Length: 160
Image (cartoon, rainbow, N blue to C red; front, side, top):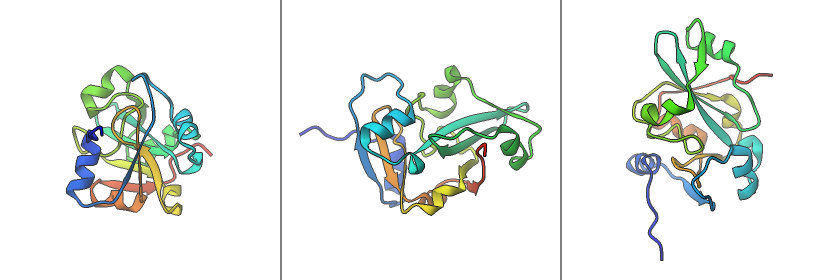
Protein backbone atom coordinates (compact mmCIF):
# COMPACT_ATOMS: atom_id res chain seq x y z
CA UNK A 1 0.00 0.00 0.00
CA UNK A 2 1.37 3.40 -1.05
CA UNK A 3 1.85 5.94 1.75
CA UNK A 4 0.00 9.23 1.21
CA UNK A 5 2.37 12.17 0.89
CA UNK A 6 1.09 15.21 2.76
CA UNK A 7 1.24 18.65 1.20
CA UNK A 8 1.71 21.90 3.15
CA UNK A 9 -2.05 22.45 2.87
CA UNK A 10 -2.83 19.06 4.42
CA UNK A 11 -0.29 19.49 7.20
CA UNK A 12 -1.78 22.85 8.14
CA UNK A 13 -5.33 21.43 8.15
CA UNK A 14 -4.16 18.51 10.31
CA UNK A 15 -2.36 20.86 12.72
CA UNK A 16 -5.60 22.79 13.28
CA UNK A 17 -7.78 19.66 13.44
CA UNK A 18 -9.83 20.69 10.40
CA UNK A 19 -11.70 17.88 8.71
CA UNK A 20 -11.08 17.31 5.00
CA UNK A 21 -11.02 14.56 2.39
CA UNK A 22 -8.31 14.01 -0.20
CA UNK A 23 -9.17 13.05 -3.77
CA UNK A 24 -6.43 12.21 -6.24
CA UNK A 25 -6.37 11.80 -9.99
CA UNK A 26 -3.78 10.52 -12.43
CA UNK A 27 -1.57 13.14 -14.01
CA UNK A 28 1.83 13.32 -15.61
CA UNK A 29 2.64 16.38 -13.48
CA UNK A 30 1.59 18.81 -16.19
CA UNK A 31 -0.90 21.64 -15.63
CA UNK A 32 -4.55 20.62 -15.81
CA UNK A 33 -7.15 23.34 -15.33
CA UNK A 34 -9.83 23.21 -12.66
CA UNK A 35 -12.60 22.43 -15.15
CA UNK A 36 -10.81 19.31 -16.36
CA UNK A 37 -10.04 18.27 -12.79
CA UNK A 38 -13.68 18.67 -11.73
CA UNK A 39 -14.83 16.68 -14.75
CA UNK A 40 -12.34 13.86 -14.09
CA UNK A 41 -13.41 13.64 -10.42
CA UNK A 42 -17.13 14.10 -11.17
CA UNK A 43 -17.47 17.33 -9.15
CA UNK A 44 -20.00 20.08 -9.70
CA UNK A 45 -18.23 23.10 -11.22
CA UNK A 46 -20.15 25.49 -8.96
CA UNK A 47 -18.52 24.13 -5.78
CA UNK A 48 -15.08 23.60 -7.33
CA UNK A 49 -12.79 26.57 -6.72
CA UNK A 50 -9.53 27.82 -8.24
CA UNK A 51 -6.88 29.93 -6.52
CA UNK A 52 -5.35 33.03 -8.13
CA UNK A 53 -2.64 35.32 -6.80
CA UNK A 54 -2.64 39.04 -7.61
CA UNK A 55 -0.21 41.85 -6.92
CA UNK A 56 -0.63 45.60 -6.51
CA UNK A 57 1.69 48.28 -7.88
CA UNK A 58 3.13 48.52 -4.33
CA UNK A 59 3.98 44.78 -4.36
CA UNK A 60 1.24 43.75 -1.93
CA UNK A 61 -0.11 40.28 -2.68
CA UNK A 62 -3.66 38.96 -2.43
CA UNK A 63 -5.14 35.51 -2.91
CA UNK A 64 -8.49 35.08 -4.64
CA UNK A 65 -10.50 31.86 -4.58
CA UNK A 66 -13.39 31.64 -7.03
CA UNK A 67 -15.51 29.06 -8.85
CA UNK A 68 -13.60 27.41 -11.69
CA UNK A 69 -16.01 28.59 -14.39
CA UNK A 70 -15.82 32.25 -13.34
CA UNK A 71 -13.46 35.14 -14.00
CA UNK A 72 -11.96 37.42 -11.38
CA UNK A 73 -13.37 40.96 -11.41
CA UNK A 74 -10.07 42.86 -11.12
CA UNK A 75 -11.65 46.30 -10.62
CA UNK A 76 -13.92 44.97 -7.88
CA UNK A 77 -11.13 43.19 -6.03
CA UNK A 78 -8.88 46.26 -6.28
CA UNK A 79 -11.67 48.24 -4.62
CA UNK A 80 -12.13 45.55 -1.93
CA UNK A 81 -8.43 45.57 -1.13
CA UNK A 82 -8.15 49.39 -1.23
CA UNK A 83 -5.68 49.23 -4.11
CA UNK A 84 -5.72 51.36 -7.25
CA UNK A 85 -5.28 48.28 -9.40
CA UNK A 86 -4.32 44.62 -9.23
CA UNK A 87 -2.94 42.24 -11.78
CA UNK A 88 -2.46 38.50 -11.86
CA UNK A 89 0.98 37.30 -10.82
CA UNK A 90 2.94 35.78 -13.70
CA UNK A 91 3.04 31.98 -13.66
CA UNK A 92 6.85 31.99 -13.49
CA UNK A 93 6.67 33.79 -10.11
CA UNK A 94 4.02 31.58 -8.54
CA UNK A 95 6.32 28.95 -7.02
CA UNK A 96 8.67 31.45 -5.40
CA UNK A 97 5.78 33.45 -3.90
CA UNK A 98 3.49 30.63 -2.78
CA UNK A 99 5.46 27.39 -2.72
CA UNK A 100 2.98 25.97 -5.22
CA UNK A 101 2.93 25.47 -9.00
CA UNK A 102 0.20 26.38 -11.48
CA UNK A 103 -2.52 23.74 -11.28
CA UNK A 104 -1.56 22.85 -7.71
CA UNK A 105 -1.91 26.21 -5.98
CA UNK A 106 -3.90 26.01 -2.75
CA UNK A 107 -4.93 29.00 -0.63
CA UNK A 108 -3.81 26.95 2.38
CA UNK A 109 -0.16 26.64 3.38
CA UNK A 110 1.43 29.27 1.15
CA UNK A 111 4.92 30.53 1.99
CA UNK A 112 3.40 33.71 3.41
CA UNK A 113 0.00 34.50 4.88
CA UNK A 114 -1.49 36.71 2.21
CA UNK A 115 -5.03 38.06 2.65
CA UNK A 116 -7.52 35.65 1.06
CA UNK A 117 -10.76 36.66 -0.66
CA UNK A 118 -13.14 33.84 -1.49
CA UNK A 119 -16.25 34.26 -3.57
CA UNK A 120 -19.20 34.33 -1.20
CA UNK A 121 -21.04 31.49 -2.97
CA UNK A 122 -18.61 29.08 -1.29
CA UNK A 123 -20.63 29.46 1.91
CA UNK A 124 -23.82 28.14 0.31
CA UNK A 125 -22.40 24.63 -0.22
CA UNK A 126 -22.00 21.98 2.49
CA UNK A 127 -18.43 21.57 1.19
CA UNK A 128 -16.17 22.84 -1.59
CA UNK A 129 -13.24 21.48 -3.59
CA UNK A 130 -9.90 23.28 -3.77
CA UNK A 131 -6.41 22.30 -4.84
CA UNK A 132 -4.59 20.15 -2.33
CA UNK A 133 -1.24 21.79 -2.95
CA UNK A 134 0.06 19.75 -5.85
CA UNK A 135 -1.14 18.73 -9.27
CA UNK A 136 -3.32 15.65 -8.99
CA UNK A 137 -4.63 16.34 -5.46
CA UNK A 138 -7.94 17.96 -4.55
CA UNK A 139 -9.29 18.69 -1.06
CA UNK A 140 -12.94 18.53 -0.05
CA UNK A 141 -13.78 20.67 3.00
CA UNK A 142 -16.16 23.24 4.46
CA UNK A 143 -15.51 26.79 3.25
CA UNK A 144 -16.23 28.26 6.68
CA UNK A 145 -13.47 26.09 8.19
CA UNK A 146 -10.93 28.06 6.16
CA UNK A 147 -11.59 31.11 8.35
CA UNK A 148 -10.03 29.18 11.25
CA UNK A 149 -6.60 29.22 9.60
CA UNK A 150 -6.65 31.98 6.96
CA UNK A 151 -7.16 35.74 6.94
CA UNK A 152 -10.20 35.17 4.72
CA UNK A 153 -12.95 37.45 3.47
CA UNK A 154 -16.06 36.11 1.76
CA UNK A 155 -17.01 38.66 -0.89
CA UNK A 156 -18.39 39.03 -4.40
CA UNK A 157 -15.24 38.85 -6.54
CA UNK A 158 -16.34 37.51 -9.92
CA UNK A 159 -17.44 39.15 -13.17
CA UNK A 160 -21.24 39.02 -13.23
